[in-house]
Length: 174
Image (cartoon, rainbow, N blue to C red; front, side, top):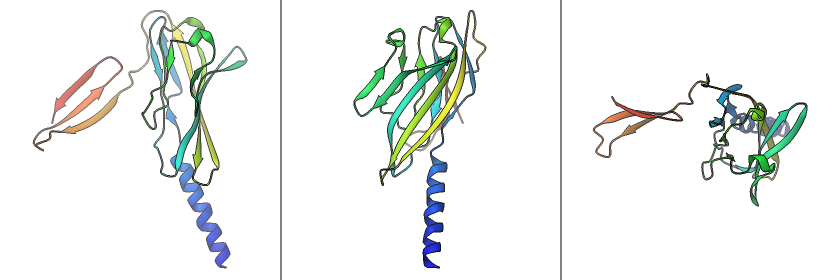
Protein backbone atom coordinates (compact mmCIF):
# COMPACT_ATOMS: atom_id res chain seq x y z
CA UNK A 1 0.00 0.00 0.00
CA UNK A 2 2.89 2.38 0.78
CA UNK A 3 4.34 1.79 -2.68
CA UNK A 4 1.03 2.75 -4.30
CA UNK A 5 0.97 5.98 -2.26
CA UNK A 6 4.51 6.87 -3.37
CA UNK A 7 3.63 6.16 -7.00
CA UNK A 8 0.57 8.40 -6.82
CA UNK A 9 2.62 11.24 -5.26
CA UNK A 10 5.31 10.87 -7.96
CA UNK A 11 2.76 10.85 -10.80
CA UNK A 12 0.90 13.87 -9.37
CA UNK A 13 4.20 15.77 -8.97
CA UNK A 14 5.18 14.91 -12.55
CA UNK A 15 1.80 16.05 -13.91
CA UNK A 16 1.93 19.29 -11.88
CA UNK A 17 5.44 20.15 -13.12
CA UNK A 18 4.51 19.39 -16.72
CA UNK A 19 1.46 21.65 -16.49
CA UNK A 20 3.69 24.57 -15.47
CA UNK A 21 5.83 24.29 -18.59
CA UNK A 22 3.30 25.39 -21.20
CA UNK A 23 4.05 27.76 -24.06
CA UNK A 24 1.85 30.82 -24.65
CA UNK A 25 1.48 32.81 -27.84
CA UNK A 26 -0.95 33.51 -30.66
CA UNK A 27 -2.21 31.38 -33.53
CA UNK A 28 -1.99 33.96 -36.30
CA UNK A 29 -0.11 37.21 -37.03
CA UNK A 30 -0.13 39.60 -39.98
CA UNK A 31 3.05 41.51 -40.64
CA UNK A 32 3.74 44.33 -43.06
CA UNK A 33 6.17 43.78 -45.91
CA UNK A 34 9.54 45.43 -45.08
CA UNK A 35 8.34 45.96 -41.48
CA UNK A 36 9.05 43.97 -38.32
CA UNK A 37 6.96 41.57 -36.29
CA UNK A 38 7.41 39.61 -33.09
CA UNK A 39 6.02 36.10 -32.87
CA UNK A 40 5.30 35.62 -29.16
CA UNK A 41 6.36 32.42 -27.42
CA UNK A 42 6.53 32.63 -23.64
CA UNK A 43 6.41 30.40 -20.58
CA UNK A 44 6.63 30.74 -16.83
CA UNK A 45 10.07 29.53 -15.64
CA UNK A 46 9.71 26.70 -13.15
CA UNK A 47 12.09 25.73 -10.35
CA UNK A 48 13.90 22.49 -11.08
CA UNK A 49 13.77 22.96 -14.87
CA UNK A 50 16.31 24.73 -17.08
CA UNK A 51 15.93 25.59 -20.73
CA UNK A 52 18.05 23.07 -22.61
CA UNK A 53 17.35 24.08 -26.22
CA UNK A 54 15.14 26.56 -28.04
CA UNK A 55 14.42 26.39 -31.74
CA UNK A 56 12.22 28.08 -34.31
CA UNK A 57 11.30 26.33 -37.54
CA UNK A 58 9.41 27.54 -40.59
CA UNK A 59 7.07 25.35 -42.65
CA UNK A 60 6.30 26.68 -46.11
CA UNK A 61 5.34 24.85 -49.31
CA UNK A 62 5.43 21.42 -47.57
CA UNK A 63 9.04 21.92 -46.48
CA UNK A 64 10.28 22.55 -42.93
CA UNK A 65 13.55 24.26 -42.04
CA UNK A 66 15.02 25.29 -38.71
CA UNK A 67 15.76 29.01 -38.84
CA UNK A 68 16.97 29.64 -35.26
CA UNK A 69 18.49 27.39 -32.60
CA UNK A 70 19.80 28.24 -29.13
CA UNK A 71 21.76 25.62 -27.20
CA UNK A 72 24.76 25.42 -24.87
CA UNK A 73 27.07 26.55 -27.68
CA UNK A 74 25.09 29.74 -28.42
CA UNK A 75 22.63 31.10 -30.97
CA UNK A 76 22.59 29.73 -34.50
CA UNK A 77 20.70 31.30 -37.42
CA UNK A 78 20.79 28.61 -40.06
CA UNK A 79 19.47 29.90 -43.41
CA UNK A 80 21.59 32.81 -44.66
CA UNK A 81 18.48 34.78 -45.72
CA UNK A 82 17.48 35.15 -42.04
CA UNK A 83 20.89 36.25 -40.73
CA UNK A 84 20.76 39.80 -39.43
CA UNK A 85 16.93 39.72 -39.54
CA UNK A 86 15.89 37.35 -36.71
CA UNK A 87 16.59 37.37 -33.00
CA UNK A 88 15.30 35.98 -29.71
CA UNK A 89 15.71 37.89 -26.41
CA UNK A 90 18.74 36.92 -24.33
CA UNK A 91 18.81 36.98 -20.53
CA UNK A 92 15.02 37.12 -20.41
CA UNK A 93 13.88 33.86 -18.75
CA UNK A 94 10.58 32.66 -20.13
CA UNK A 95 10.67 34.77 -23.30
CA UNK A 96 11.39 32.75 -26.44
CA UNK A 97 9.66 35.19 -28.83
CA UNK A 98 11.07 35.54 -32.35
CA UNK A 99 11.62 39.02 -33.82
CA UNK A 100 11.73 39.15 -37.62
CA UNK A 101 12.87 42.42 -39.19
CA UNK A 102 12.61 43.56 -42.82
CA UNK A 103 9.80 41.12 -43.53
CA UNK A 104 9.80 39.64 -47.02
CA UNK A 105 6.78 38.09 -48.76
CA UNK A 106 8.35 34.57 -48.62
CA UNK A 107 8.52 34.91 -44.79
CA UNK A 108 4.82 33.93 -44.71
CA UNK A 109 4.30 30.44 -43.29
CA UNK A 110 3.88 28.36 -40.15
CA UNK A 111 6.46 29.15 -37.44
CA UNK A 112 6.94 26.60 -34.65
CA UNK A 113 8.57 27.49 -31.34
CA UNK A 114 10.03 24.43 -29.62
CA UNK A 115 11.48 24.58 -26.10
CA UNK A 116 13.18 21.62 -24.43
CA UNK A 117 13.75 21.76 -20.66
CA UNK A 118 16.03 19.56 -18.55
CA UNK A 119 14.80 18.62 -15.09
CA UNK A 120 16.99 18.05 -12.02
CA UNK A 121 16.82 14.28 -12.69
CA UNK A 122 18.12 14.91 -16.27
CA UNK A 123 14.85 14.01 -18.00
CA UNK A 124 13.82 16.17 -20.95
CA UNK A 125 10.43 17.82 -21.49
CA UNK A 126 9.51 19.26 -24.91
CA UNK A 127 6.74 21.70 -25.81
CA UNK A 128 5.84 23.22 -29.19
CA UNK A 129 3.57 26.03 -30.34
CA UNK A 130 2.83 27.04 -33.94
CA UNK A 131 1.89 30.49 -35.24
CA UNK A 132 0.84 31.27 -38.82
CA UNK A 133 2.48 34.43 -40.18
CA UNK A 134 1.02 36.23 -43.20
CA UNK A 135 3.12 39.00 -44.72
CA UNK A 136 1.00 41.64 -46.50
CA UNK A 137 1.78 44.81 -48.42
CA UNK A 138 0.46 48.00 -46.86
CA UNK A 139 -0.73 48.44 -43.29
CA UNK A 140 -0.76 45.43 -41.02
CA UNK A 141 -4.08 44.43 -39.52
CA UNK A 142 -2.49 42.58 -36.63
CA UNK A 143 -3.37 43.49 -33.10
CA UNK A 144 -0.69 45.16 -31.00
CA UNK A 145 1.16 43.03 -28.48
CA UNK A 146 0.58 44.77 -25.15
CA UNK A 147 2.65 44.29 -22.02
CA UNK A 148 1.12 45.79 -18.89
CA UNK A 149 2.87 46.57 -15.63
CA UNK A 150 2.01 48.26 -12.37
CA UNK A 151 4.64 50.53 -10.85
CA UNK A 152 4.71 52.00 -7.34
CA UNK A 153 7.05 54.90 -6.55
CA UNK A 154 9.99 54.29 -4.17
CA UNK A 155 8.26 56.45 -1.56
CA UNK A 156 5.17 54.24 -1.84
CA UNK A 157 2.92 57.20 -2.70
CA UNK A 158 2.04 57.04 -6.38
CA UNK A 159 1.02 54.05 -8.39
CA UNK A 160 0.74 53.97 -12.16
CA UNK A 161 -0.03 51.47 -14.87
CA UNK A 162 2.33 51.25 -17.83
CA UNK A 163 1.33 49.81 -21.17
CA UNK A 164 3.96 48.90 -23.75
CA UNK A 165 3.17 48.06 -27.33
CA UNK A 166 5.71 47.36 -30.04
CA UNK A 167 5.77 51.06 -30.92
CA UNK A 168 4.48 53.09 -27.92
CA UNK A 169 4.82 53.32 -24.14
CA UNK A 170 2.06 55.00 -22.13
CA UNK A 171 1.79 55.53 -18.36
CA UNK A 172 -1.43 56.47 -16.54
CA UNK A 173 -1.41 57.49 -12.84
CA UNK A 174 -3.95 55.64 -10.71
